[in-house]
Length: 209
Image (cartoon, rainbow, N blue to C red):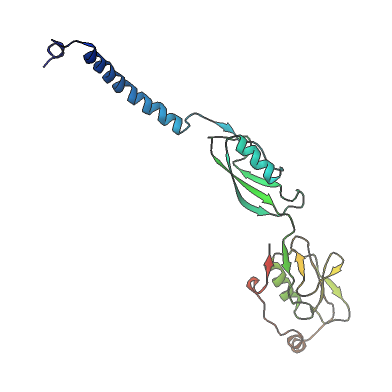
């Protein structure tokens, strides 16, 4: 059946209304799907990420959410040059263009120094053992200070600045330590007697980061 034969004898409001509706459906559905998908995926929509580094975590979250972005705290660390609770890093960085609803990951500055329990090394270990234990715990060390009248390399004290440290106290990991060790000489037999200890691992100490 050709088109002319199909339309022969057909007339009336209902017939032509159906024809119009069919045309609307055939054209409208594809167009609606195309533009709807475009809107759903936010194709072509770009938001400039605000730079929130240095802002407080709460203020940074407000800025990012007002811009149409989401926020997630990804990590924390301690930086003495920035205020406690401030944003240290963000990903994506400020100025990048992203789609609405993108998650911005923040790294926040800790509100206090990471503290570590000071190990039992004074009068209980050699210089080499003490250095190994403190480095495992994340401490940085200044050059060893020698103490006259004490056996060579026998640890007689540890300082942080001018303060003497004691076993079990909580100590800032971000400030260097100075080991005080003997400057004298000692034979191998006496060395074994003075500090017959095995090196310990990080798992043996309590950490509070």
